[in-house]
Image (cartoon, rainbow, N blue to C red):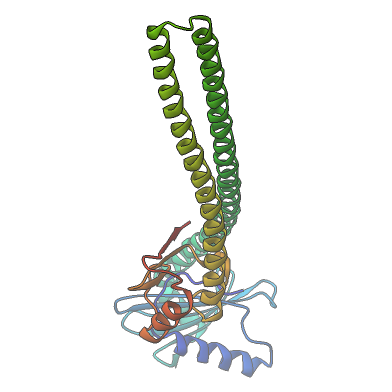
Length: 295
């Protein structure tokens, strides 16, 4: 398992070559874990080999001189400085430096473990966030469908209300006729009946207009529903195409997307002009069409 304690790769190749050389001389497999860091002119590379009991640690340390150290626990087995082998009876000269290195290595291992645990937590949270986003999107689609059904029902209710209004006007006209017949011969009654007739005719015309408008509203609701379904299908096609073109490793990785007649931006990045032209030619289905998505 490889643990990266710092991002720098300065002198890492030197550390790796030394590690493999020592292991080749001993006739055993390469070290099982490596971590390193660099800070200006200081470099530290640590290899842990758990095939030994106790585990052995190979250290390449540069802070002016270049130190190569092999340890078992806190005991120094081999030590060289700038390629010069140090005899065991002189190891004590470097006790302070080795103690400092051991403390740094201990801190680095603790931090590496914490970083790994945090990375696992972050990955789990990312999965939960994605699943919640998918649930929210599905709910939004269900809400949109319900809104369309409600709009259609409202249109039907409006038509029924206008029909009831027309029927009420008819009944009113009939009542006025009955009154007019009862008061036959009365000019005032005849004039009132005429006014009622004119008013009833106006109401009939208005009711017809309202009915036509209600039918238009219903048709518009159907067109809006069809358009919404088409837009959803195009959005999914664009996501698949984005993955196919290598703009994202998979569909779950697409966290934001903007597309219109001028540009395509995926996860905050703008693809090449060639891909821009491809997407405009393939997915711009009508003037003013655009998609803005963010998870």
